[in-house]
Image 1 (cartoon, rainbow, N blue to C red):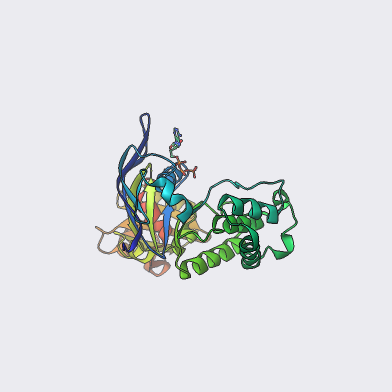
Image 2: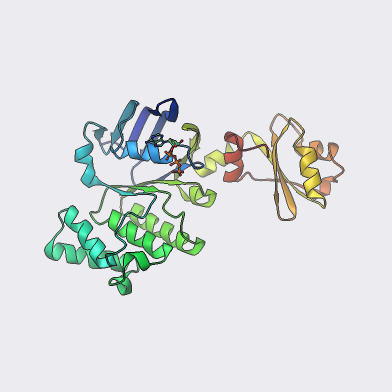
Length: 307
Ligand SMILES: Nc1ncnc2c1ncn2[C@@H]1O[C@H](COP(=O)(O)OP(=O)(O)OP(=O)(O)O)[C@@H](O)[C@H]1O
């Protein structure tokens, strides 16, 4: 038995001249949460659709839960859950009716259906909402209903495409707690996001840009292996200072965070604090060498740095 829920090698999808996914290699371990982090249009949905067997790759090899895709896609259908970017349930059915409808699709009927729906209503805090129309629920409640529907048949592997783009931070945090519960019970999860805080919660992630994987690893590995120094500067006139510093070829990017300027400097510079002090009128006491964040990793390994 493979330790991997998903393995893909040399995966590509071309739409005409556009390489939506270009030569992607990924390995997703079982009972873990793996993230695709990247901006809109970088190919996250295209990659997920190929890994679910819904889209045929232009080239490459895919094995999901021991099944080869796209050849064995039909056998995979009952083993996976897929929560798409858009709410795909029925707005004019109630919460309970939606779950009953999905149950029937999976062949879950009678007392088994009632038991499973009651269980899901309780897990996802929807007990008192069961007679409410899905269309009248809040963003957070809809996401919980969509997750309940995607996990109704207890899939071994769950695909979530930007699941929390329409929910507030509190609901997002709760949603992730539920993902970790699923993971604890043995479910493997592949989730796409463009939020750094969400990506940081994943066991492992791949950073995608223009269909290409720019980096992958655990969030800690990605941050530790960054070939840059990060300096935070506390000073006045930060807008001016930023303009001055980003002219230097050794400076990768500089971005303001409230009263501080966060500057990423190539690690070919041996003494980053001395370097900033030399190229500005800021004293060394206002400069701090800090730990890179995932956002620093993202701007360094994608083309989003110079602004
Ligand atoms: N069926 C299609 N035909 C032509 N181009 C497509 C098709 N599907 C996706 N694309 C293009 O492929 C690229 C990747 O799209 P994709 O939806 O996978 O990105 P994404 O990272 O999921 O972005 P978003 O979060 O905005 O959905 C985009 O340039 C998109 O326009």
